Length: 157
Image (tube, rainbow, N blue to C red; front, top):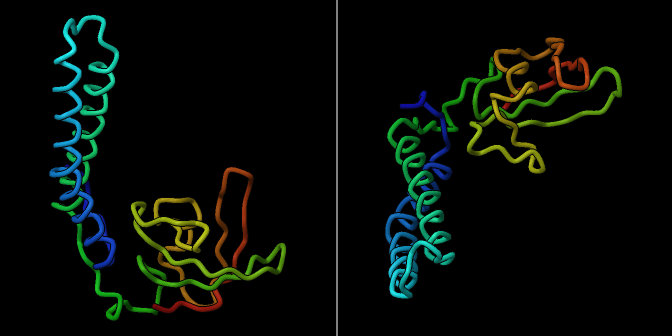
């Protein structure tokens, strides 16, 4: 079992939809591919059979992971996020004190991370560093390329 994962309602619904799709349509498609490959005869030298069985293994692993995530996920109501400190699903506006550039990061679970959209995982170095920070606070964050110094300008939902 994994730890609790905090997700938005949308992300939780997408995860449940993906799980349903994989358990129904994808399982059926792979079962048909295995049956077709098995019908070709000798399984010891049947590359199609081996590929279909490997794909089945990957599918079952993904299903197991999603089932665990759905079972342990906590859906967070974004409207009830306390903005006194940076928490999961907070939007944190920061200024990089070295470059003077400003960025807005939304702190999300790893499953929802999308750096191009400004959604960073709370498990990432910057996400970890911003968690618990407050408006006006200066935060030093260790990243693989060194250290970043941010000033928290705003925290919102």
